Amino acid sequence: MKNLFQRNWYTEVRRSDNGLLKAKTSYVDTYREAVAHLIVDVNSFVIQEALWEEQRSTEPINARTLQVTPLCGSEAYFSSGPALKEAAAFLKDPLAVALFSETIKGIIQAETFLLDERGYTSEQDYENKWIDFFSGSCRFFSSLDRITKTWYDHVGESKRDGNLFVRFKTQSFFDLGEKRYLLTGNLSDSFHEVNVKIKLDGFMVEEADGILLRAPDLVCREAAALLVNLHGINLREVTRKELVSILGKGQGCVHVIDSVSDCAYIIEHFKF
Image (cartoon, rainbow, N blue to C red):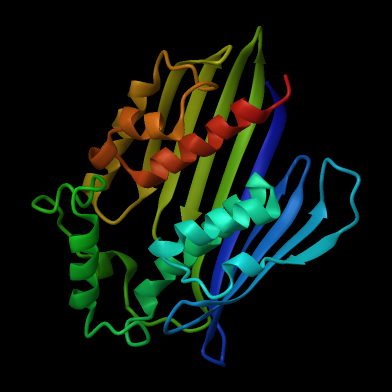
C-alpha cells in the first residue's frame, strides 16, 4: 500500500479580550499550504476582518497575504452563503472558499459557549432554537423521541474561556495496486469524532464503512451504517447533493457526509 496524497485541516476559534473572536482554518496538503483567518464581533458575529494567507502552492508563487473584503461586514453564520459566493468570485480559488466556509462552521459551533453574548436566556433556550431550526435535518434531529442526552449533557458546561472550539480533519489516499485505491477520512473536534474508509476499484466504490466514535447521542452512531449505500457508486462522478441523498438525508449524519465529500474531492481532482 502506497500513500499518494493527504490533506490536513485545523480549525480553531478563540475568544479574545476585546469583544472579538479570532478564528482560523489552517490547511496543509501534499501540494499546498494556506490559512483562512476571520475576526468577528462576539455578539453579532459580524466579520471585522478576513485574511487569506498562502505559503505554498503548486504554482510558482511567493508567500502572500490578501484581505478578503467581500466577507467584511457579513455575518459569520448560516446566512453567510451570499458573502461566500462573492468571496469565491473575488478569490477565484475553491480552496480559499472552502477554508473560509470551514472557519464559519467553527464559529457557529463555538456559539455553544457564548449564550449571554448571543442573547440566549439559558441552555434550554439555545437547545430549543437548534431543535426548531434543524428538525429533521440529521439522525439526531430526526430522532428526538429516542435521544437519551441533551446537547449540554454531551458537551459539558456552557462556559469556556480562551479556546472555544477546535476541529481536525484528515483525508488520505492510498494506492493498493492494480488500479485499486483506499480513501480514509477522519474528523475530530470538540463535539464529534468520525472515521470513514472507502475502497475503490478504479473509481467505483467496492467497500465503505466507518464509525462515529464520539457524538451527541448513541442514535447518531446509527448513521455510519448508511455508508454501505456507497457500494457501486462512481465516486469521481457523484455530486455533493447526490451524496447527501445516498447517505440518508435527514436520517444521515452531516459529519459523515462531509468526510465522504472531502474524500471524493481527492478522486475528482487528483491527477492520475
